[in-house]
Image (cartoon, rainbow, N blue to C red; front, side, top):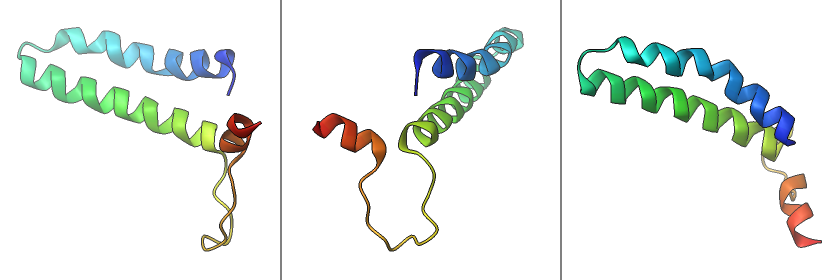
Length: 70
């Protein structure tokens, strides 16, 4: 994942973060803030790790882990 890819994903969540200001109570603000950041984290993780193999039992090393070993 490149910096440009990450910024593109973060930009898709920017409007949702700006919309959080409309909440009057902190509980609802915190709950929706957590949902936005968890969703962004999930997308970043999926793009970093790569696609899921067709055979879930097959053990392979992901491209991200291989790059750290070199």
